[in-house]
Amino acid sequence: MRPPVRDLAGKNVFVTGAASGIGRAVALQAAREGAVLHLTDIQGELLATVADEAVAAGGTVAVAEPADITDLDAVRRLAKLVTETSGAMHVVLNVAGIAIWGTVRGLEHEHWRSLVEVNLMGPIHVIEELVPPMIESGRGGQLVNVSSAAGIIAMPWHAAYSATKFGLRGISEVLRYDLRRHRIGVTLVAPGGVDTGLVQTIRIAGVDANDRRFRRARKGFQRHAVSPEKAAEAIWKGVKRNKYWVYTSADIRLVHLLQRYFPPGYAVAMRIFSWGAHRVLPAVDDARRSDLS
Image (cartoon, rainbow, N blue to C red):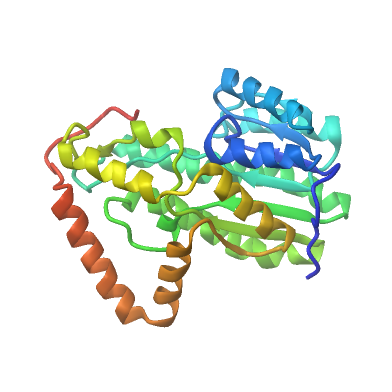
């Protein structure tokens, strides 16, 4: 299929999680290319700041409205505002998400539920409300879902997080073909390490965040992580080419190739990965956490 969105000038772009990290970066890059932005995030003050930055970068901000994507009614109101203001979107980006990791004994039930509500039901709400107007417009477009490396491979302590990211991957795989006849492409983004502000506050249920080994591992992660801006460049490059898989770093591309074309090698690599992770950061399995922050 010919790429539905070859450039962003004058295009309606909707971004969730736009107040920080990858969401902010994709919004500002789109602004520099002349897009008409429709931004949302649960953090209202930061969202307003990003909207100002987008205007300063040369974009048009048609809507910048705080919303909790886990609230279907809130998403419906936002979608109604967006569609009444600008018509159907050309590009919808599901970027917003949270990260909670932990062992099976370390994770609380509320951790699992929060991840499902934000990382899976949130994008579903957006798809429900904004993709039908795209279909009805008849002009095509692109749906972008940000999954994760944890939506591809078996990363240690990521069971709850991976459940949501694999779910979003499954939705994308189906819509990739279902929406093709409407000239709506689907892009599935699988970021590896991205150095956002959340890295400083990340917690793993069942692991002591004050442990010297944890702090050292976090610094190592930051050294190898790409910037949100680098991730945004990869995403927009993929959108313009109507690419399905988009990787933000070469390591995730390589491990995905290993998984697909040499499963025995992948299995050995994951066993070593898991063993090494638990050796570096031994989990305190009997430490129960109720704090979601």
